[in-house]
Image (cartoon, rainbow, N blue to C red; front, side, top):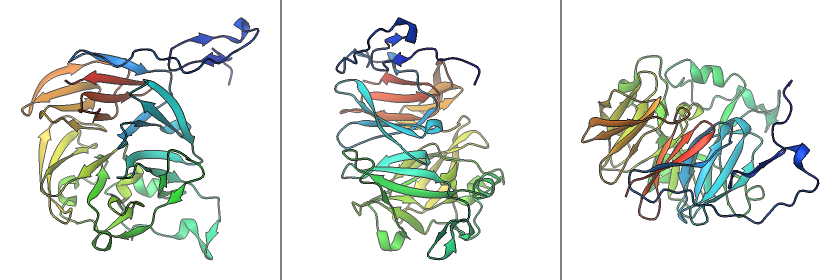
Length: 330
């Protein structure tokens, strides 16, 4: 590239920078805490900046927040107690979305690109049809599957590289998970988003805890996040093509039914808080109260994914291209 390095050293936790011309000796200090999380209800603050393309995020049972910088193939760990961030792992394949199982393992949906003509058990990897001809309802997965496949792996955050484990695909009937993660957003340019819920999913990627699973579907190829399905409760999914939020009912076997348009906004993410307020990233961050649009927040960059998190679910975390924000909810 024709541009030279802007800063040799950037500390994302404190915002301190140094150009190479400023250095005679560089001493990296111990993690320095700087207050970043907002204290007042309704206040929003930028807690991380200088990343590349952040989108997916999830919360671990211990309260840590995992953040996906997808274009650079990186996953970060944000500690809300110390308000610092570290690089957890840099993978060989692009991470697409994240979740955690009940034992704290990080589940990563990846864009796996095998070496050309590589074989497993004598069968070329790219010949295998993962979904029995299912296209995912549009042009994206057929394009994606030309040279890539979806793989889901589990990682122990204490030893990210050493613990990498590929998750098996099993039938939902066999797995019987307590919680099933579903793509938060889908792009179906075939125009059949509503009709697609009449087809029940039959397979999943089962996590090592035996209780958590991610649905086996070509929609994972494009999804920027995952949403948990809880039997007996409604779920809210993003119709990315028609730019709206769809509410569906979740049956005892995780079958989805009765889809209805809940809001005429939507792009990649959605969050419904304990209080019933909804947050929809779509150019702006739209706030809905009692199903009606109440307000909108403009960020420096376009928001992507949102997550209600914290010990008492007091924060809404927002990823927005190069930055991560936190909005105080309580």
